Length: 147
Image 1 (cartoon, rainbow, N blue to C red):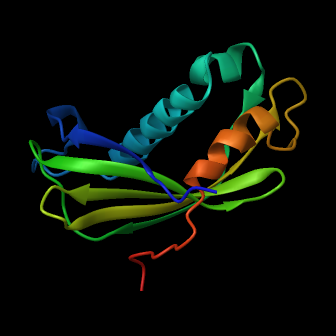
Image 2: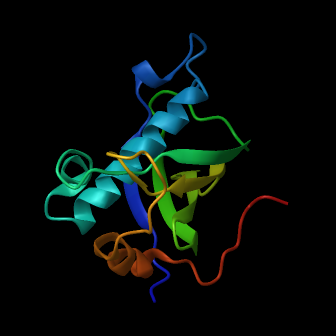
């Protein structure tokens, strides 16, 4: 069992901001979805595309909680991180964070994803080809910034 997080540096872009130059909140969900896809790409030889197109395994979100702590502005350099707080039989709970290079937590998400068959659209067990590499990202000491 690991306890590492998947992280990516990201620069806040014009297209992610509102007219005030501050991240428009739905853009965080796009950033985090892209992060999750990149994470799956690192675990599977055929990547996220292969998971969906060939293996016919879906990963829909069934629950989402978000806390916005501090603003992010166009041009800010941030680190996006992803770790697993719970790995169930047919679902996983992710902790996603956006932290500024200044160390300030900008925003945090708790997301529950269910693995599904894209043929039947029913929940299925998390496949071993995902479960095994995901073990490395299971956070053993979850310290959330949520009070």
